[in-house]
Image 1: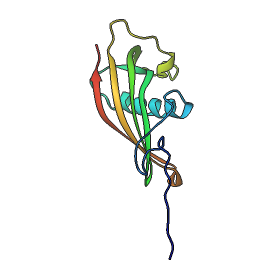
Image 2 (image 1 turned 90 degrees about the horizontal axis):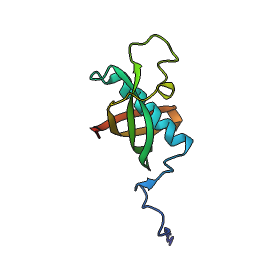
Image 3 (image 1 turned 90 degrees about the vertical axis):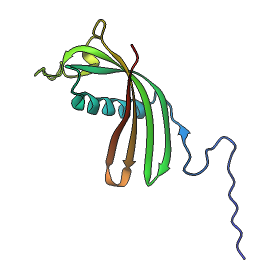
Image 4 (image 1 turned 180 degrees about the vertical axis):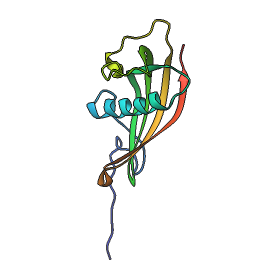
Length: 129
């Protein structure tokens, strides 16, 4: 007879449960920037780019791959989406637009490392001002 025992620390989430990520890690910030880039290209209501201000929620769980859930704050910039200059299309180099929109974006990212695949799904966009 074989008996399997599972030991789980009280600080560890259950298998398949959400666990907190470092909101300021390079990897988390890169996920947020890629999600924002997708939103900048697909959002038809604004003529200006938005830039990342800060990540407010970062968590992950292991699924078939990894699921990452992020919420972050973004601010409208003075850079136009229609700009042809690649430097102007880099939101981090664009100044914030006075009176511009501030939004909170929530996204889910499904990462399949073995396929080198990341699928971003923006689940909500909320105007904060």
